Image 1 (spheres, rainbow, N blue to C red):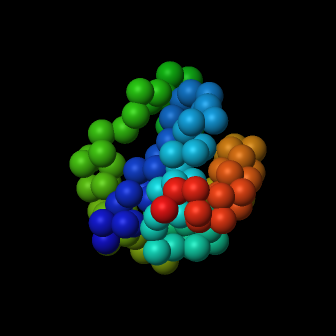
Image 2 (cartoon, rainbow, N blue to C red; image 1 turned 90 degrees about the horizontal axis):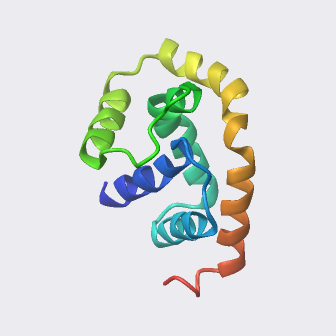
Image 3 (cartoon, rainbow, N blue to C red; image 1 turned 180 degrees about the horizontal axis):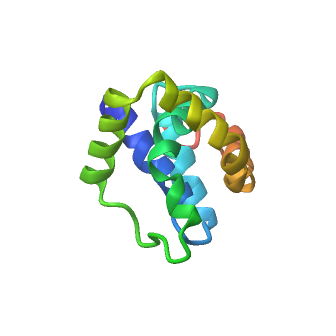
Length: 123
């Protein structure tokens, strides 16, 4: 669970109302490489666990930009996972079709750095 929490926190960077820098992408790639999850697993974790809790921040004109409170973030994600219904999951999948594209360029950059490292540069 601790590895998953670190991934959640790293993924939350994608939902800040800021322009991510190279150092942000390297940080995310490092956390992802240190986790027991594949890159595809992490994309699924984002879609199913982090996106439902944080995507609205990207739609707010003055969204959170300094960073999410980590304990509250983890609590909210865990609450979502524990209480979501099949209808909630379906609704999020539909919403993701439209709003998941917001971070497409960021995902490309994270994946590029992730793939360049082959694990050796961060471990």
